[in-house]
Structure formats: structure tokens, C-alpha cells
Length: 94
Image 1 (cartoon, rainbow, N blue to C red):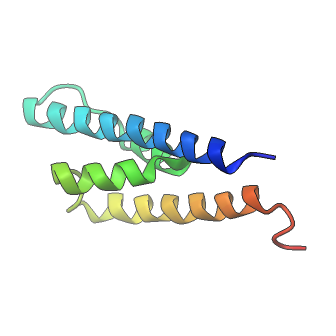
Image 2 (spheres, rainbow, N blue to C red):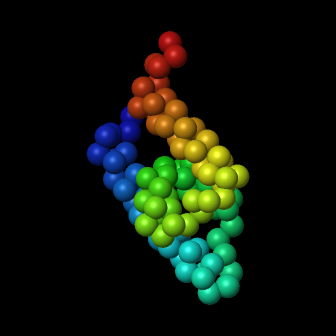
């Protein structure tokens, strides 16, 4: 069983990593250099980094106007939340 403390620690770390990846991608977009693939950004969101991604989107105004990206992003958020409920309560459907 995963403790709440371990889960919170994981979420903080993955959110921080995701925030930094968004920041680097925004910087690369401005410079016209190599970009982080959207698939990577979505994977980080799905893995629990969506709070950091959401903060980065708002702070850096990054990936906020691309509708297709936002649709997949919010699907990843929903799937992550469902997964979190199932991990914290394995008897959820019983």
C-alpha cells in the first residue's frame, strides 16, 4: 500500500520535473531550437505531473491556445485522477 506521504512527495517531484520541462520547451520555442515532443508533455501529465504542467501553462502561457493539445492534456488529467482513486482504494469497484 502506498502511503499518503509517499504519494504527495511523488506528486510534488513529478510536478516540479514537469514544470521545468514546460519551461525548457517554452524557452526552446522562443529560440527556435529543439522542442520537447508533445507526447512527452502528455506522458508527464498522465504520470502525475499535471499540476506542474497546469501551473507552467498559466505562468508561461505555453500550449494554452492549441485546442488539440488541451483536449489530450485534460484527458490525461482525468485518467490520472481515476488511476489515483484506484491506487488509493483498490476496492473502489467492489
